[in-house]
Image (tube, rainbow, N blue to C red; front, side):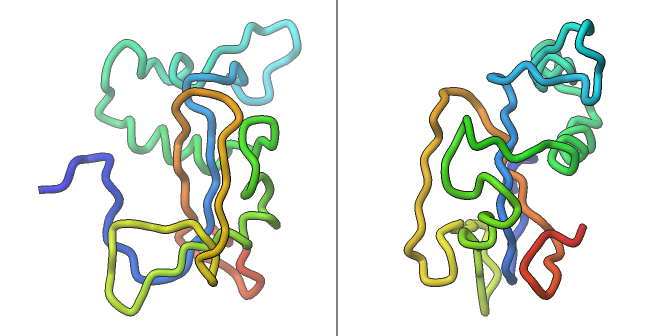
Length: 131
């Protein structure tokens, strides 16, 4: 069987967003300046236990997380993410090569740590995330 955090098989194009998990104290979202911020891992308490609803919490973090050019190059904005499309087909595959349509793009992370690898289920006509 599949590991619970493995990707499901995919058969279309998608974009990428990397969200820092254990290396950026940016949570809670929208908190006032005097509120201490913690990493996403600590905010969701996933450093203490593996919650049953962890997938839902991480999905929300993907939707609300921001691109961060200080942590990686390449797909560091929704516009730049279009240059790193993963386009799989015609057969479904669980591996998404975020290397662009011509498979000639690569990127690096600038900071050590764990990142959520978020991909968009539906793209609009301009290949921007629609969901």
